[in-house]
Length: 245
Image (cartoon, rainbow, N blue to C red; front, top):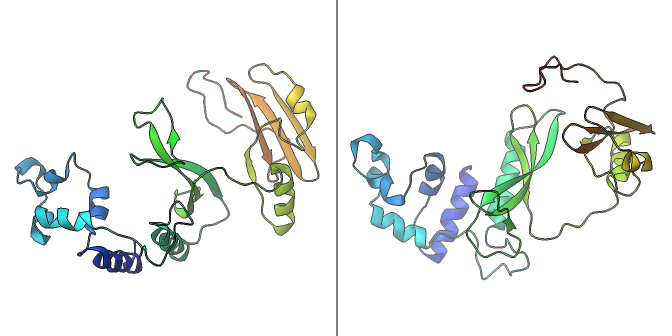
């Protein structure tokens, strides 16, 4: 959250209402049960900074008019059009501030949401059942977010994982990730093979390695970085008390 992002929010909020709402950033870091608690004078939970900047009534008035984009200049062509400029500016800042090394990963992340969105995700096993899904590009060693993208509906994919991995390999980019065995261009042997717990079946072709193994259930990875050889990691399983490989 650099000065450019904050200044943009301030400018658009001033157009729509008035004020500066950097408090929302601080509230994300220092979380309390209700907004009233940030202005409370109770000794055990007192945070005098909020009172020193502005009264609670002033903050609530500003929060009512918080705005991220000029609605008159940006049409609703994207479901995220009301916050898209801020997301784009934040992603650009992530890339400028830090350059990761070779080990990066792409994964999904879910954020709690109470709004009415057609692309919201529902998971009945979570305490917060309704969430918005994000794709994040992160540096594996310190979890730094290099880029992010919100899921807004059905994703369009070009080709299959196997073809994508083969296109990236000549460019000097090694890739490793989970894949379903029934995907197109995957070895039929992996799909048909029935495994017992602890067993594995490897396949390789043109710098591309596919491996299926079973711990509790079947899992399969596709990689241009790894070979067919197994090695001990030096870690011990908590239940089996055996060396992991």
